[in-house]
Length: 429
Ligand SMILES: [Zn+2]
Image 1 (spheres, rainbow, N blue to C red):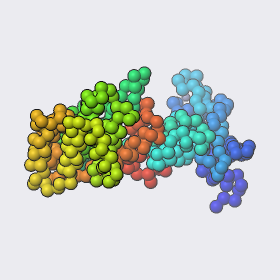
Image 2 (cartoon, helix red, strand yellow):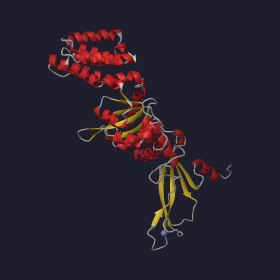
Image 3 (cartoon, helix red, strand yellow):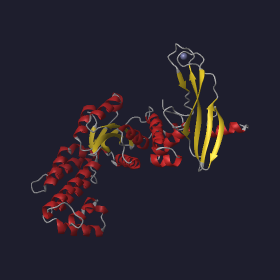
Image 4 (cartoon, rainbow, N blue to C red):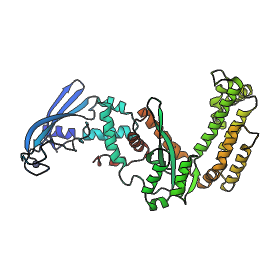
């Protein structure tokens, strides 16, 4: 129990090993001036008793006190080594209990912003505004403390169903060059295990190999989008795992083919790309919506627009194909799944079908085993989609990421299930 007012003040600042020299309130701004108590210091290089070389103050952002913004002015001690032969020269004191040397926030404030941005996906801007400090001050703290938290060993354990998925994380430069990354997901738990740069396969392969043979041996199912490079990774690193095509991507491909058909027919019938009043352009969203989610009015409207803009029925055929692909996943008898996929792809890859539907049929053939395997694996695509949605939320909050490292840390803080109860205990090195 503290009875001395100065001591109480130190406890309030959360630093009971410093002296509070001054508290200044100016409107909604509070500045607390502190210094450390230690006055005898040895040279870190040679151990000789150091000589004082004056002070240097640094302003650190703290968490708000009610509506008041709080700054801590730390009067740092400067030291020098009296031994002329010592290479050390002079230095400024550091104390990680107060602040990390690479952060302009009080340690406790840095941890608080890490949770606000990392766990609750608040934008860096918003948090910086709340505390009255700069975007960089908050962002640096989140990256510094966030990285320490996500890289703790034991964040994830054994994984029985693993998924690889490509994610666009930035468009860069004048030509908005697209940069991709690969996310590695525990499909059963819906946990983002890691994010690696690129979508070519070399990086995910290296990541998987680094986890060790025992860990890899626990993986029964390996889910992927319809990408040849991830297939090659699984063939090489997880030869015994059953590969499963992610239903989300299979349905997405069917929708893309439907959209291609619509645009081609549009162009063929009207000689231009979709415009506001064109029937096919007007039904583009109704087309990709799931059949059972169309209202009666929506269905009538769709049929009417197709009758007006799709003379040969190509778009209607592509729509039926898309719905048939979706139906694959309603049909759950594993014994019949492969037969079903084969029959469907045969129907589609047929000379009478529009070229887009034929191409869809050929892709289904190439991935027939992986598509049918979903029924046996029963790994839901729910968790992967949940992770994707989480990441979209992170990206919206961040307005796109400039650097891969920032993206990785933010995505893992939000979707990687770090142990937040450790936030108060572990810090950056
Ligand atoms: Zn020295």
